[in-house]
Image (cartoon, rainbow, N blue to C red; front, side, top):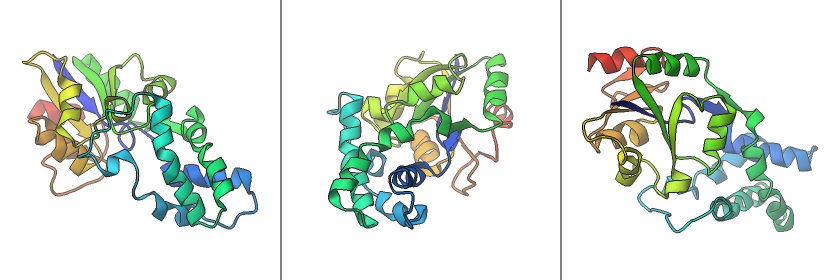
Length: 229
């Protein structure tokens, strides 16, 4: 069996501006006259997300609602940080989930579907392993990946963020012991070095870094790289 573990955001798909843009969209909807920029919000989002402390599991979070409830203080802090009063900040923080998960805001990279389809023809099974929100599997389906992706392993569901070894162990637990497994992602620390520390070969994409033994600017060369190994 041949399996590729794919990161999602920044690798297969993207949401323009990610969290900073999301909060800015929420703010502009509520306060169209605001002079607060997206860049002003971003510094308040550098801590507080589960992936900022990947060594700490969060297996105590059982539901999607609980996951988002844990994030609410982060959003409130960002809104108050750019000058909103606490009442409005709390109200807007509750709107972030729907805005971030809006299917229309998410897109696949142009090379994602062609690469996955071509690799599937070559016998590769595709799994997603991502640090993401609980609704990731819904996004994957909405973007038309359901027929190509056999499994979605999301940190918000498993309670382990890459590069925690348990994130990789859970993603490979059901595979045959002789399976050939690769990790492909755009983060050298989380996806590449994290996977390699668990004995999984990895390919860095889109963001070059000298620490990665294998790199591809896009996804079209993934087949070539795994075949050459």
